[in-house]
Image (tube, rainbow, N blue to C red; front, side, top):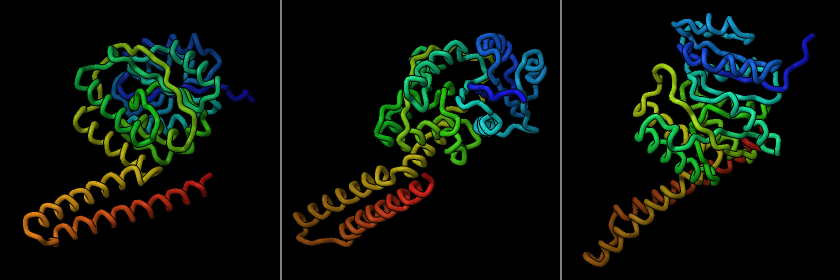
Length: 287
């Protein structure tokens, strides 16, 4: 029986034959003997034929399920104790995986390749990623240098702990990054330079951007509900108090609207408090 590899590299691919032609020769040369898995997410081009020329394992979806679904398929099939994921569009340099592994072996549970400003496809995407990074950093209480990077190295067992949370779409990096942070695992960022992608991107900035924000709040509230509920409660309290001051000074009375806002602020805070306790109990049971 063949011994299990130390490293498994997972590449989700949907119509990425051009990118695979660029990176598979380098991956197979640099990581000979390790497991390389290409998950063909219902491609209509010659992705499978390109992979057939290299010693890689190909798993095919019968139809496109999404980038996150492809990652889940690859991770479930991976046998290595160290897991690496990278995009198949040619943006990532296979040589960077070794740098991420070296950093990982210094005591981290996950190391993410953080793209510099010159690696962003457009100014709009650069701005959007900066906003995502700022919001995510606030939610998890740690600096998030690149929330949406697809290049990362992680402990395979710890990665699988959060598989049920990963969406099938393009925001799996958002979910897994925030999950690692909120679980208290050690996460590091390694600077990388990403190249221009081969072919057309499947990401829509507006549509998928809104989904990214929703997932940030979903994961944030899953592990720390008070991060969401306290600011909303405080906003209602301040508005209610300000409105009460205005009506008292001008009309000498306490209005129903002030009462409604103040009561709402208390209710929101109590809901957040209960949510925090439920989250703690659920997480403790998992651990």
